[in-house]
Amino acid sequence: MRNIGEIISSNRKKMKLSQPMLAALLQQEGINLTVKAISKWETNATEPSVATFLTVCKVLNITNIYEEYFGINPSDPLSSLNDKGKEKALDYIALLHDSGKYEKQTATIIPFCRFIDIYDNAVSAGTGNFLVDGPKETLQLSENIIPSTASFGVKISGDSMEPEFEDGQIAWVLKQDVLENGEIGIFDLNGEAYIKKLQEDKNGVFLISLNKKYQPIPVKEHDHFKILGKVVGKNYPDEIKEYLQ
Image 1 (cartoon, rainbow, N blue to C red):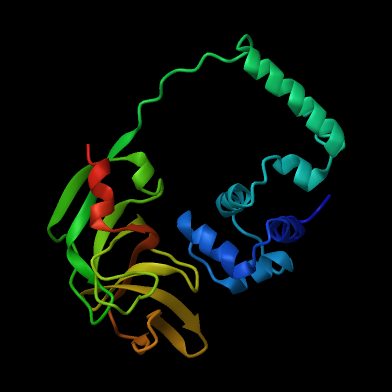
Image 2: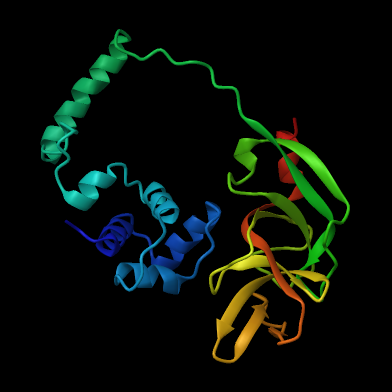
């Protein structure tokens, strides 16, 4: 039985991806994490959550998780074949598909749509803006433009989260009141709303900008501080227009 770190490391290297490249691909899937987090997975210092691991498998084209983890999969007749045997079996499967006699009947899938709120008061990637029960716009969008975990959207103002987040973009947010250290979220600090990275260390709690010209914002003992959610994706407003229903 292989460990998760070995599975991630070997398949990453098989695809000729560096750890930063894997982090960038995961970010496109709505998972924001550091290269250090991937390094910890691969050395088995930590393990990804189930949802994150499944996304890693998707990015690394791991299609048979059972076989990767346990070895031969008794329910998969291809699992016990070597590469040449698998190639011959797949050639025969291709012939069956080409014949047209053995295809499953499939139904036409209608894209799923959902309603989602986008707050008009922009969250600050700079000095801070107010965002609590403010004005909002409710859009009906097709599911493939919105991360499945998103609870609402917010508009970004300022440049302190560049190059990852830019002024005018919409950040998609999963509503939750707890974040792991290093995750990017939406925060209410003394009535002002920020998009920042959470940092908690021996010196205290800080809201960190990705743009190095901005200083960390300390969260002081008597401040009103609340986590509004985790950022799980982003889009430019023009990108979502074609997905409006």
